[in-house]
Image (cartoon, rainbow, N blue to C red; front, top):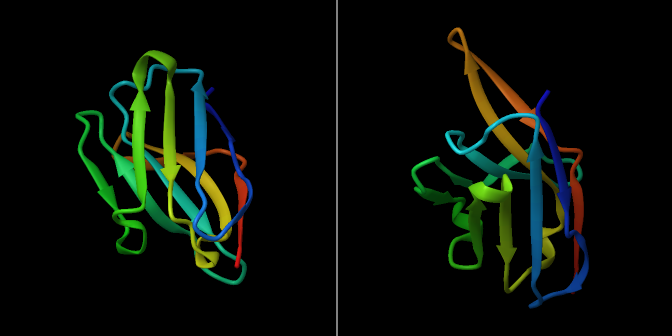
Length: 119
């Protein structure tokens, strides 16, 4: 059973930094795409950053140049380094691994970690 556990959230002032971690267990993840999503109150969940098994990275426009996603396959962990944080980055951040079983997508999610940026 795949399990994802996020950590590293907290309260930070605008302009500050946080580093989120997501530890995965229950499978081998080196061939998986891994992603970070966030959901602010009253808004839809949105993808923030993604890294493929080959190391290709993609970012939402809102975080380009400020956030960096990285993975450590030896530790089954994906990170999100968040710099120059803004109040609009306030959200619950979720780790995600999408997989396909017989052509059907199945998403694994962590429990989420709260990030609050004060102005």
